[in-house]
Image (cartoon, rainbow over all chains, first blue to last red; front, side, top):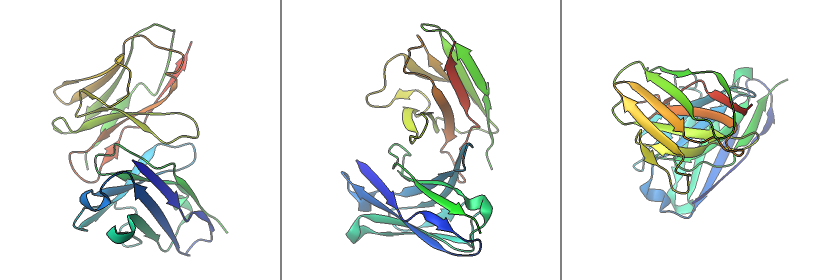
Length: 112
Length: 107
């Protein structure tokens, strides 16, 4: 199992960013997937989940601003981040349904 | 939301010592509890799932237990490679919630 995130970077408050998570080593279409984040020097916070049938659920802190999606043909998970705030600055990890395998993470910095 | 109260926040122990970290759930979560170890600059690694099951490749000195809504991670003989931050996670219901973490150091 391998999960590789990409798409992070420095972005201004109010702007948007789209993260990707490329999956391999398992049948991606059969698994739900999570996004989890970790602010610098802080603990872990669950962000969103998408089921194998594309049902979604979000943390209150990101509901209405972030959108989780998937492309099973490309074995890729996405997280669209809109209306970004400074408090969204974090390392973003994708993880498989059982939160058993995690990617290496991608840094998102929201700053003017 | 289900709250996970983790203790202690930090812990310093000697090599070969027994170490115990606990998480108290604010409501019944059954066996939907996992433990992770995170080392600096790395992603968390799964240690225990289903409250008591050892993840693949994890040394047998790690074990998990449950008593009511209190969950414990025990390291039976602390080794030099065990320092890091340990987190619990409840997977019973969304939003999934993590404990606040326990920083483990070697004395």
